[in-house]
Length: 220
Image (cartoon, rainbow, N blue to C red):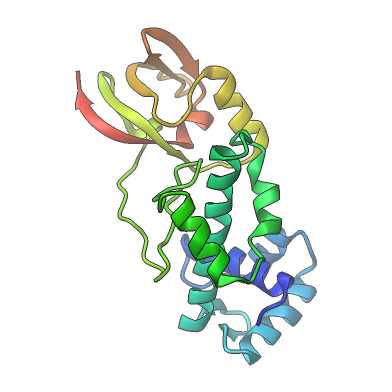
């Protein structure tokens, strides 16, 4: 059984590994907000337990055992986020820190009943896919809003930036999951995007547009 800290490391490595094969200790240290030397000590412990493979100066990779453990933590985290939003009326920008605590509950029976109680959701409040009890993710196809062309239409189905400030900003603009959008214009100078949402014109920065994920409906 892993400690809370070990589980946090496994989850961080899992998310970093989605972008690169060999995860560097400095990247883990940045995410964990700790010193690289402390990360190295923990990585060695995880390697001894069979959760990671670690070669000095070459980085860290999750073993099958480590990946399975990480996916299980991700599953619990995202199910708890759904519960907090759907059943306790938390806002989508409020749930991450609470779910960080709840994800460490060990009871498999509780998580299976939670999944059933929620109706076996496929995604969390931010649009991230929830793996099933066997660790399988539903296939999803997203396009970044910034990559859409003028007249392209789509539905907001996820975000790749989960900070509270970013989610509050989207909430203020009315850009929440399920909203239909159409690209009205793109500014050459700074890449800002003008979109139509329910007939209302909204201007967003390139930085915001990079983190909004769309399931495309094609062109108008």
